[in-house]
Length: 266
Image 1: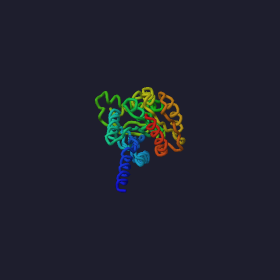
Image 2: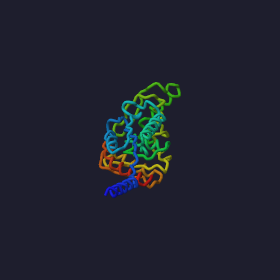
Image 3: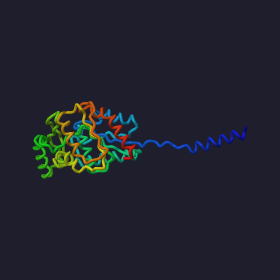
Image 4: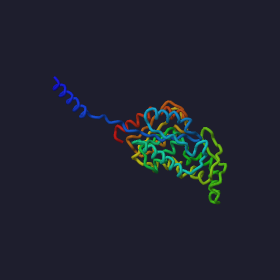
């Protein structure tokens, strides 16, 4: 009996050693960016917290277009801020990092992907493209003045300059002209037409156009999404939400889209 017991224990030990180990799903990361005049603690906070609750590593950034920062640095410095956040998440173990932005953050995410390597983009109700006629009408005078100040060597001296948002119309920001011109240059980083023209086909995009978004953004989202280069992993989703409620409402679509990419080996 003792020999039989020893034999059975040996069999169990061998079985345990040969039992396949289930692979753990890879850690995923998200860089989250708020909209114009916003902050990490407002409309994107539910998105950041919701992803963290589901195991994501998250960097919820305060970007230069926040209500506190007022375009305090140029677009190149903003690029570096996102690059650093991606590197930080990967250092913590994220196998893939998706760059996500709401409103102006969505437009900037598209710009970033047109310049830097990224695993995927989530553009949530993206807006704020500065190359449109209305933008040029609303901020054109301030842009011309900022350019003159830069030419005169006064680019670092903060000035009261115009900004524009469809729901708020014109409002004032206090910004260094040298930084301001990079944000409002119609051929610069915040031109969505330029970003989509130069967008790499290999990068998958989840485009979130909430049903209750501002009519102009609903219309422009359909147009801009159509300008992306073909990719079988692009998705256009329309959650039942307002513009401001879109980040939270997008969580189920983000989770499903990212899971499909991982399972498909993308």
